[in-house]
Length: 269
Length: 169
Figure 1 (cartoon, each protein chain N blue to C red):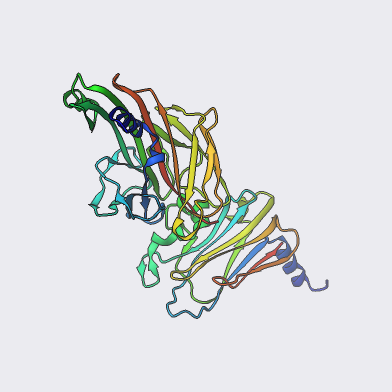
Figure 2 (cartoon, one colour):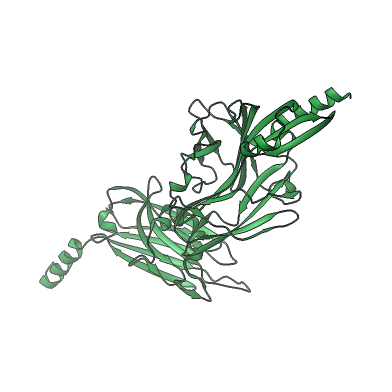
């Protein structure tokens, strides 16, 4: 490979959809449906190929955001990041539904400097200072990723489920903590707060280590961004969808990669 | 009928409201670690909505039989259909866990909660879950109102014994 081809390959790799080159990110709560007062849960956060086994790298918690049933932020407790997983506790002090999310948004850039490839990651603010204005062969791409899960103490509520209007989000038609084996659940995907049609959705059940196939379920969002899944079994499921568009926040970025992951628990009848 | 007293007694009996008797058997289970089960008894309508809560037996405070309402969600169907919407304890419904044996619940059709039932098809549902044990749910369908005496039952396989529903008009 000569230098320009190498650089092109690198640039291409940077903008490839995450699913083609990266592992799966996930949050795994100790419980999703709780009774009693003053409940606690603990959550594992990791990135791995195998669901839900922590065997690759931890999911960083820098962008962890927990929303309480009143819509206000809740602090995670007892945070720790180890070799393979991060972990934290959430005190469910009030009844209702909590949204637990790691939301990453940023820019990545590559260019050529003195004949060598340079790579950079950061946000729009830092971009102006850290990436040379005259960078040669500059390629910039933007990413917005949300990895989340939902947990309910007592009666399910909707305040924490409200769309933030940024990136890809899942809106409940069926409440995400009211999922049962054999029943259909309907959700709506939003992109920047508006219905996101024609997205391919991949859903993989827990327990890959003990079976030979992924057993993935697939769905496609309709014109209103809606899709339905009928849960074949009780268990935990990893749901993912992503897209690439050109709605970037800075003109230098040519593409924006948006991804969404949610861990859902389906209970037996 | 010659005896006036007997006649009047019969009249009282026939004008009295229908009676509903529920018997829930908690079976003896040979386990090295045994805890009394949490049990919920309710009436559901055709759409699986709870029409009446009849009983919920659980450890209402921290005891050797359980840590209170923390494990109520393990009565999965009941928790989903009713428990999560309730303020606990539920008056006249919540009760302590019961030992092995047959437990009777008696209801008067003219009083709540049965007085509020509209005519239609219902089911008596009994769900039991035991710490370090299993979970079991039984359904006994019945028609309301009661027009003739009926004895209905269902037999559990592990967490519940015989559940009987006796309806007397």
